[in-house]
Image (cartoon, rainbow over all chains, first blue to last red):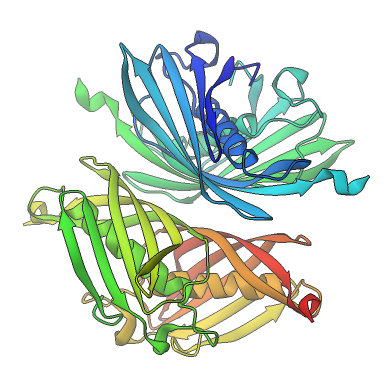
Length: 125
Length: 125
Length: 125
Length: 125
């Protein structure tokens, strides 16, 4: 998240909004943010949303995700929204939405559905 | 691809191998390459594989992809393999495989299935 | 839809609810409705939702879908909800939700994200 | 599987082929086998392939799958091939391929990537 300049804008149990400013560094020639960057933002949003509902001492691992790219990702800034659809002891399913923001208008540019796995890393001690 | 230092190692009709060296910049604290980087590599491999079977003057757009993360992405270098499963005039379906390479041993760390769309950008002229 | 006894319960532009009664025929030994039946219901809901936003004379084809199975599909009846996330001239992306209904309570048992393609079949004439 | 008349044609550790004859019952007006039937066959193939690598006393649950529909599913019979891509103690990832067979020629009509979960049901006793 630090590499991409992503920060937490809002966080509640089972929900999170991440914010990212536009940077030419991780964009294509045409100024569109690359699918890998969108995926990283969405994956982080899903992971943090899942994390908010887990017991202390849990670590989280992404098992899989599916992303649909809906519109060119062009904007001054970006919002990555993660919402838990189904929490679970072992597996949690989250939905993510990526919005491009331009002149105060949000456009949905990509969606994700992801499966995340809780690891009880303190068990190892 | 330039940002991540990815280059084409092998290219045939409907198939491509991309190579990437490890860099601490796009890795997590534990040295694992981030899911967004793997996705970018896999998406590029699928896009280039699809591109090799398209008529001249086509541009390519990723519609959607699904990624499974299978093992920690730790290695000296990485290979992203893209193969066309079903070419089409409008839509092409590709499979991608990401391998971490350490001491000459390849480990499959992630897979992708993606749908790509051909755009005949010269039609606009 | 006839084989499974599915009917349209509600339909608006970009949205549809399908209803299905429980039948032992398409269930497993434990009384849970099989994933293939849930997928058929969700795929139909997504297809009809997409269809409501298309020009007359269009036919619709499912390109791909991803389904997460969230809970055992046990109930007296089932609702398959389809909503258009992003309409398009060629491709439309839809979300689907399958609910099991028991004693008036709806439980989300499966989700789908699907990509559908419009075919202008009248063009062929 | 009994409802659809699916049987095991070949089974090895981590791999299985299921066979199904064409039936008008689960096909559309045009004679194409419905996506829900293909998904059921692919899901069964993936589940059985995963099952062959699990310890005795395991039960198996499908977590999620993604299906691409590649060609019209028309044929005298169908083969559903399931292969384990990555076995695991908790989660197993499988690939599935559905082939339509006509006059001895196999055509790839759909693919699946699925995540399956092992349940140690004997643990409960």
